[in-house]
Image (cartoon, rainbow, N blue to C red; front, side, top):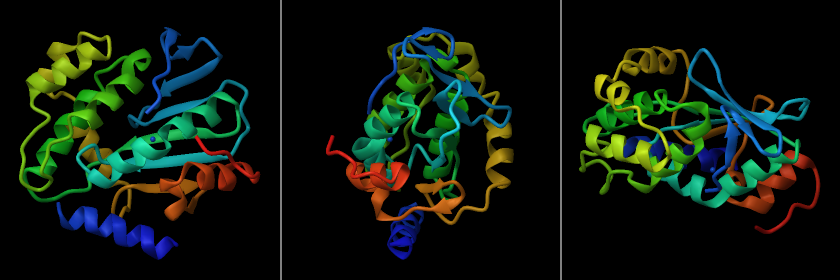
Length: 214
């Protein structure tokens, strides 16, 4: 199973999770789930008192396989976080070395750091919605597009996005992470496989239960 994930991840490199939380105050949802930005730019979604297992999600916003995973299991991941059954850490990385994918990825990730915590999840959805296609050929995530996506997510951060002031910090943090491809998903440090594309299977591995179809 792990080998199949690595094949998918490697393919994504070679060719170069959908719900939105309604936050009532910065970083806090109405049901008590907090989204908090860490110093390295990662975003932690968890119940305030959660001692649940930790799910680390490493994603490149220009990666089509990441977009597919997002579409299939993001709703489940967020629901489990709201229920206090998992603590999710989202890591935006740039895995691509070739252009235009690398620049696409950096622009998007740098822009994501501009978003307030309250708007970040919605912006992440917008990024996947406007992912450049065809992959490996199309340039995208232009400054204009990113500013528009931020406004759709409810934030006006035009100056920050235009400046790309977080690009260097994003690349520096990415360089610290020994990834072979994206998506890479770890549960308490153990790499998951094909279950990251199946909501019921992913729920089973996280909770140890039967899971549900969503």
